[in-house]
Each structure stands twice: as C-alpha cells, then as structure tokens.
Image 1 (cartoon, rainbow, N blue to C red):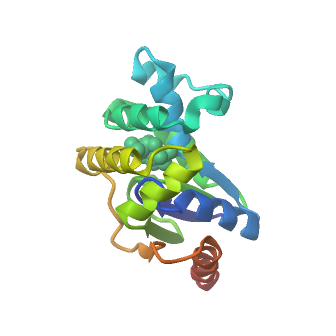
Image 2 (image 1 turned 30 degrees about the vertical axis):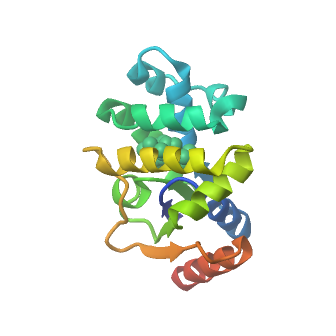
Length: 193
Ligand code: C5P
C-alpha cells in the first residue's frame, strides 16, 4: 500500500521546503507539480501540446524558478486541457511505493482526493514576498504584487482553483522557523502513518 501526502498552498508559503523535508524523512518520492506548469509555460507555442509532450529535459531547464516562469505557469494552468494533459502523470506518481509527497495547488482537491495526509500551507502575503525576494534576489515590494496577482489568478480560475480540501490541515508558517514548520508537518504525518 502506498502512502500519499498532498501539500497545497499559495506561492512561497513554504510548501515546497516542507514537501522535500517530508520526502527525505519518510523515504518517499517527491514531485513539485509546479514544475510541470512552469515547464509548460516557458516552452512557448501551443500550451496544450507542450503539456502533452513534456520531457525530462523540459523539467530541468535552468530558468524554471524565475518569477517570469511562475507567471507563465499560472496563465497556462488556467487552461483545462493543460491540466488534463498533466493529470495521469501526477496520479501515477502519487501511487509510487512506498509513498509520495506531491506539492502544488490542487493535489488534495483534484489529484489525490484520497491522500492519507493533506496539508494546506499558508503564510502572510508580506512574509511570502520577503522569502521569495530573498530567494530570487528581487525587490520585496515588486514580489508582493507578483505573488498577489498569481494567487488571485490561481484562486479565481474555474478549473481546480487554489483552495484547501475540506479535510486538509492548515499550517500557517508566518511565525515559524522552517525547522519548526517541518517538525509540525512530520508530527501530523506520523499520526496518520
Ligand atoms: O508552485 P509554483 O509556484 O511552482 O507553481 C507555479 C504555478 O503553477 C502556480 O502559480 C499555479 O498557477 C500552477 N500550479 C497549478 N497546480 C499545481 C501546481 C502549480 O495550477 N498543482
């Protein structure tokens, strides 16, 4: 029996760091599903065709972490056919033994509605902007506007909008050091394990 951990939340909430740490701690596979949308967004051309033909090479491009790639990702992520093209890969990944951690926006609601653990990671807008600005060497005020625009687009789209699953545990990382947030997440998974 595999064990799926679904982690969702807005940009720069800390979900990726928590997902990676959980995967290492429990010896599970990890998929950052945002990379699928980023790779689709930066490929250019027809996004549906891009999503249908993503290669390992697309997923390891150096420019995927940029703010521009994040914006491009959230635009193509609103297209239902793009999401449909990426569905099976994510579903299969989630079933990998002995377990898998997936982080994104719709893991607990659409990709893995039966996940053994669902976390919804949040943090205040200002904290998220500061974290992402430090990571990318960018201006926090500019970052704040970009994150808010992206969150709005992700929350307001008709298909798989960003929202917590009804049975998700909400983890607010605003006032937590990363080690504290990871320790709480491990405790939550341990209880369900
Ligand atoms: O998580 P990350 O910031 O890399 O995601 C980039 C964009 O990809 C998000 O803003 C969102 O529009 C989209 N995304 C999504 N569903 C996911 C993961 C990411 O729509 N499961």
